[in-house]
Image (cartoon, rainbow, N blue to C red):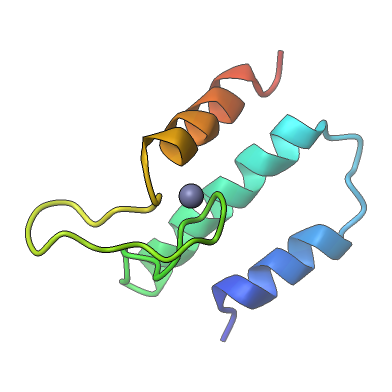
Length: 83
Ligand SMILES: [Zn+2]
């Protein structure tokens, strides 16, 4: 089964197909989201931006980022990709 570590390796080793760094980042985040759905595990153990450990809240939506900085960085990449 593909896990997040293997996914990172696959994406890093793939030729970039002319994608910008931001587009690759967006692809990586999309893959993580898809993987989370496939594995029925929406809460990754580590931040998908910086790989820092996440303290998950006891209730509410599982966090994918360690903090606002990473969440905003990911949102910035998603927003600017393709421009
Ligand atoms: Zn982070």
